[in-house]
Image 1 (cartoon, rainbow, N blue to C red):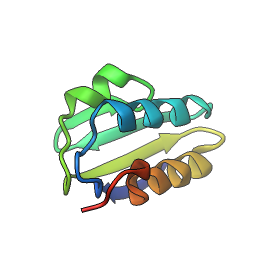
Image 2 (cartoon, one colour):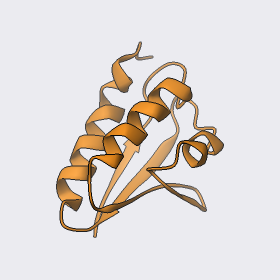
Image 3 (cartoon, rainbow, N blue to C red):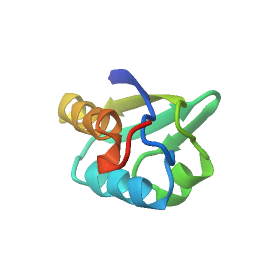
Amino acid sequence: MKEQKVKIVNKLGLHARPASLLVQTAMGFSSSINIIKDEAKIDAKSIMGILMLAAACGTELTLQAEGADEETAVNKLAELFNNGFGEKIQ
């Protein structure tokens, strides 16, 4: 299992567009991928789950993947967070 902490750096947080981008990216991997916020653990391939996190700018999350491509999956998703999903970074 591979885990990595990430922080939301885009100004508007994890709203619909970045959530969609996150799901599209996660769907490209065979590994089981979860996003953890506090006590909530959601499937990174579920747009509704991601939106339910209501994660604003500055929120810290943990990416967790398990499977054949877990390392690549976590690294690629962390890159999306670190780049602010291509949006304005605070």
